Amino acid sequence: MSKILVTGGAGFIGSNFVRMMLTETDHEILNLDLLTYAGNLENLSDVEGHANYTFVKGDIIDAPAMAELFGQHKPDIVVHFAAESHVDRSVLDATAFVQTNVIGTQVLLDKSRHHNVKRFVHVSTDEVYGSLGASGLFTEETPLQSNSPYSASKAGSDLLVRAAVHTHGMDCVITRCSNNYGPYQFPEKLIPLMIANAHEDKSLPIYGDGKNVRDWIHVIDHCRGIKRAMEDGVKGEVYNFGGDAERDNMFVVTEILKLVGKGEDLITFVKDRPGHDRRYAMDSSKARAQLGWTPTCTFEDGLKQTVDWYLKNKSWWERVRSGAYQEYYEKQYSSR
Ligand code: NAD
Ligand code: TYD
Image 1 (spheres, rainbow, N blue to C red):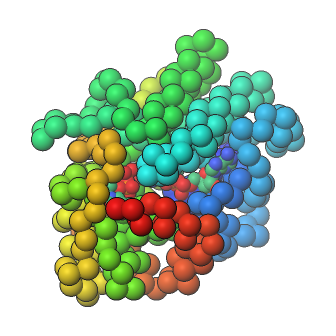
Image 2 (image 1 turned 120 degrees about the vertical axis):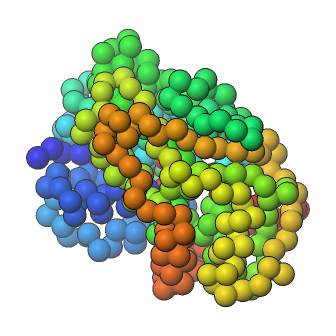
């Protein structure tokens, strides 16, 4: 049994990971999260009180607080999810992205080194590789050519993790995954935003021509990959995870409309996102061969299950959409 510090465990992927680990393992989980607009303890209300679960509120960029936390809890393993994660917000203002994603990652690396953490798992994204043309897949050897402030800040953090391995001999692995979907995703991202808007008969804003392609993966398949990388990944290695489910945005949105039972008249084409990456697609053969991982959920099953979850949990997304989110939505979509 190990003590695992999970950063960003109150967010979308982190909360699914924490729940999975508490259900499937006997590891002790310490969830460190600042509870920004994207972090919500309600995501984990079902595991509150679990004997192996502790939550601590804190900011990963606060070095003295992190020193105290590592000294007090002495984690064996760090699984690092905490980040600013939404591309559109990084276009509006990149400050928090550089602070949390770059500086915050270095603070965690420093504290992990000083406190002899045995393994540091850095959760990164396919977006660090940039954009693909009509064919080809990202491999772990693809050069980092980030195009958005979000992906540039993630690439910065990936390189700091690489440097920690090469300079200090730290035992780190990096995971890079494609677009996740599933329960508890904040409704600023494509799939939950479109489900919520369709349900409420609001317009569905598609950027540009709607032909941008993402490789969709169910969040649980991603979490299973992170767990395998944590357990058996090789020090210093990068592992790609993808869902083998390339779909363009128009396809995704029209499928959502069918599942919610609404018409395509709700679709509105709006001004494109600046620097919008055209296509992402992952080659996950290394993770399959070396970690014995494979995605198990088809996009069709996963999307149906996700739409059902959002329709059953309307009170969850209504609550997270209140307050500051309204201001963001106005700013992001009113001028498009
Ligand atoms: P999210 O925005 O839902 O959650 C991020 C969490 O980090 C929130 O709980 C937030 O409160 C916390 N956080 C933010 N700043 C913090 C700080 N300074 N200190 C402590 N906690 C802080 O993000 P997500 O979609 O769950 O993504 C998690 C990770 O996975 C990120 O590193 C992201 O880059 C990566 N990733 C996401 C996707 C995706 O499709 N969502 C795909 C690949 C990789
Ligand atoms: P998003 O969920 O923001 O993920 P990412 O940009 O990190 O891949 O967006 C997924 C795709 O959907 C992307 O091509 C942008 C597009 N999109 C829209 O067309 N309209 C929207 O309102 C949003 C949020 C995204």
